Image 1 (spheres, rainbow, N blue to C red):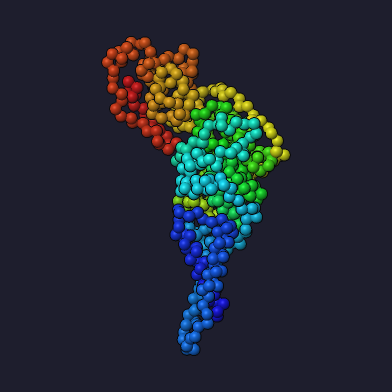
Image 2: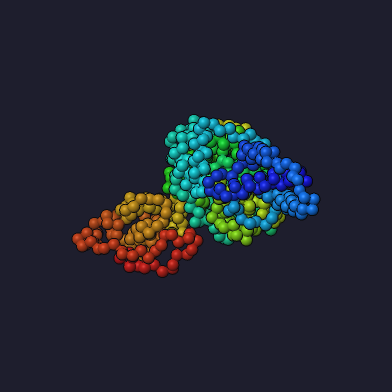
Length: 536
Ligand SMILES: [Zn+2]
């Protein structure tokens, strides 16, 4: 009886600890499985059990109390059987959804050594912690973090200071849905004219899914996600920002994932917007990420997939050309962003071949600690991107010092229609630069086909006698990039023309309304009609 009471008290102590952690959502980071916090918790547990163990009580022989205590203890033991696996695998956050009950799986202790906090690491951990709720905001914190400066993972002989700094701009996840026409057959096929495939989903009936984890600002969370996948017999594909690999704690987590058969893929070195970078800088971002992973793993590691910030750049021919040169297979996109999706959506849309995007925020961690067991229980296997799409594992060879492959100059062999549906590609940036150079656009080139670009193209079309529609058609681009392309001073008429002189004499008011929206989802067709008076 006394043993039961003791167990019950221990259970209460454990339960209390779990509930306490659950209530601390957003303030305290979930613990590492069997890490220091566990040890502390267990010690506390034992002390509690020993210190508070009730002594023999004198009871009335006829009292119903013993039966009540036995019943209570039994209930608690049953409750424990359900609760402990969740707690032990790092869960306990109340925001974790009420996934279907999952069979207990023994949690393995991390075999890799726990990160030893170096003096510098403290700041890094603080940055991770404070940026926990908004993964991309964490970039802001980490970018200026002194702990992130040592170039442990940079390529030898590369001047890291010459790199563009990590952009604190939020990752655009508005573009997180795939379209069915991006998938052709079990393995997405390449588009024509030098494009590589965009891998958003595999067409398969086998119950396999790929969970991809991006950025990796929060090393502790990353480690817990990796451990959870291991515990459920699954594998992840991890796409760290190269710069985050300058931190020892992230390196250790990545090595641990690799040792357990997981896959690493490219997510740039500083998380920039490729579509407005020079070709040289873009190439360096790709090369340095792969190099940082290679140095971390101690082997030359041939990646197969590239994903840029927010996946925005995935249809950019220039990037496709360079990753092809690097031996990559294509762009890794996703079927569903777990970072944006609700728990219900994650559950209801679980399907063979899905690719999921997650980050290492506290929020994503708690979702994954529910989703991974849930998917496993539904009969799904977590596989790497390579396995999902039927490719061999990423190749390795002894670590060498191979130099960055020089990017080929970007040459557009044939102009293609570029309009508001083709945002976030370098072609837009080039068109904007040319419009600015000729005086048709008074703005900054940013690679986003917004209202100003649309209007400038329309006025240019009108000036060369084309029917203006604001789309950079192949014919429009032929004229725009021609040596004798007309210039403008006012952005509306050809410089020196009678119309321009008249416009300067009596300036007309700018259009008062802007009927075209730039924030429309990428895949929505813009309205078929264009208000021609816009270009008057
Ligand atoms: Zn990212």
